[in-house]
Image (cartoon, rainbow, N blue to C red; front, top):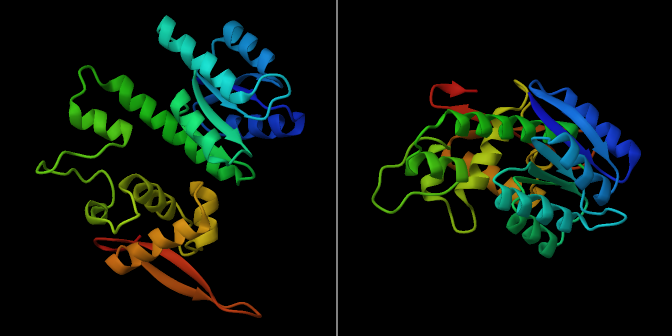
Length: 244
């Protein structure tokens, strides 16, 4: 069981995040904190595996809490992973979270499904890492989302088209968007806006990847007509043997 500490200064938001965590199999809420001081004390007392950390805290900036948690992990050989959940979307904060060692970054507001998807992915990566006794470079690249050196054989861990992406598109985001599309409800597909909300990227970026998949034949488009305005483009995954 993965034990989670939820940190958010808004009591209702903290309660909502706790409910979402408890609904994901294999996760349980170990505790809740509403400021940085409480968060650091709770980590010492409860030793959670994962911290859902807000950045806007009333006493200590969330980035500082992150650095202290991950700094302690480096120095002592242990400590929780941190998944940032915040309304902060400025480049400095995002870069600070990345450099501080956050495993994921979710921007508020978001659909509950997005957080639950991130938790499931975190659990999968954690299980995969635990199963490795002596990981080779391929294993490490897969876990860190890295790419192979030129001339080496590629493994089909992401969509086949990701090997030759147009300028401005990355294999990691392509895999994220592809995974989000494949998890869409049967027959319904996703709009670019829905894909963006579930994957945590902008609508413009989501549309670029989705249209690229369409151009490669790994996704198809249907049109949903409303009462007014232009029809909505709905994207559906396509597998090698037909529609997903």
